[in-house]
Length: 174
Image 1 (cartoon, rainbow, N blue to C red):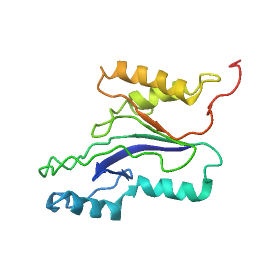
Image 2: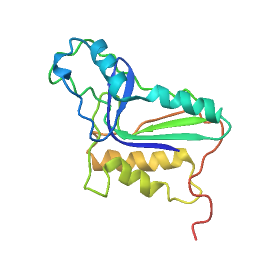
Image 3: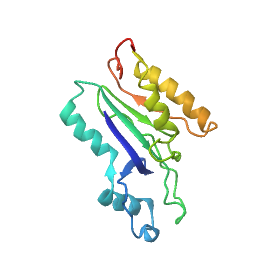
Image 4: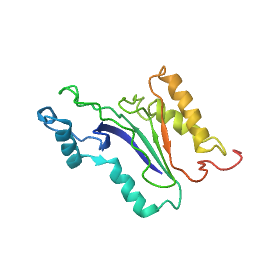
């Protein structure tokens, strides 16, 4: 499992994971989304690269689950006019994998209280404890709780290329 909790942004259909504490300087001076993308490639982690590394290591032999609790909006539009909307959901680029997002493409993910997590991580952490629940079952439960707790603003989509059933908590729960 690969888990990322923090800041992210989608530019030109690519998801960039931004390390905590990173201050992106001079983004207001960038003239286009292409300029911003080049800037992010130097300072942030492109999610496609994470998948490429794991594809080389894992080769689809075991299920790989990506859990991304981060915004998927372009937070830089406040300083520049948006070009065209080029946001797209990153899709699994690894056989036998699933990408779970805390929110939809182009949206922000709500934060929670320190140490508790936001609506998504709180619901997901509780749901993975369900005994013998498949990843699909876990996501249905997580999604219901996220939708309810955010008044239908946040949805928690998942994109799967799993080739086998995946269970976080095998057993009878006793």
